[in-house]
Image (tube, rainbow, N blue to C red):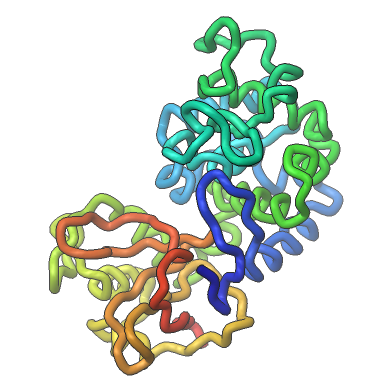
Amino acid sequence: MTNGFDTAPAGIGTKVAAGAAGLVLLVGILAAGAGTGLASVLGGGDSPPSAAAATQIPPAMLALYEEAAATCPGLPWTVLAAVGTIESGNDTSDLPGVDSGANSAGAEGPMQFEPTTFAVYDEPVPPGGVSPPSPYDPTDAVYAAARDLCASGAANGADLSAAVFAYNHSDTYVSEVLDLAQSYNQTQAQTIAADTAPGIAVDWALAQVGTPYVWGGEAQGVGFDCSGLVQAAYKVAGITLPRVAQDQYDATTRLLPNDPLRPGDLLFFGGDPRDVTHVGINVGNGEMVDAPHTGANVRVESYRGWTNLVGATSVLH
């Protein structure tokens, strides 16, 4: 499914093209990195995980990314984690080729190695790995990916963009990885967004992940419905929004199809602009945080597969 706000169809285990927002952020990353090194912008081994990282990456995989990246000075763990997120949802995907077999391109395991490439980087066997090394073993795969990136330009932060491009020969893949890596660095995420109302709202909403859906709910720790979550998140950020999704859509500034989506922008779904039935908060990388429906919890999910996107709005204009 495609739409005017993000024309890159996405799916775990596929290489996806970055949307306009990702390209805009990539320009910012490269500009900020001039003179200081892209690795320092994306965050090194001592960079604390952002709320997005803590939400999207299981703790065991997060620790694994940090440990493996430390074997290559100059390789930020955030880049390694971004690759793992895009390739397999951090080993959570049930698509072919992640736990067994191969995908249509012949790639295997959570880091989606072709067998010949994995064979080049699968040794020495890291602590916790298996012998002989297996591309399906998360430890073996992540350490092999760190070695691959290191050998391709990540060593000493020489050329992270080239290292990611060597991993998957796509400029848009590079953009998406570096964009996502920046969002995983708490310091950089705060620099970009946390001093703004949308950034505060995003961080607060992400902290509510796991809270039950309750129709009409608007109470932290008790339950939210979709618009209740949005209203509560922006209230914390100092902005008062109406209570229901239709009124929130009507009260905020509509974005044009070519406008870049930014964290904190609101995504509305329904039949048409006069029949809005659901709202989520954009968190970047084609995902939103929302309270979906009865029987579910507040969660982070891709909005790209939704076929009834009415439009997106900003609370700031």
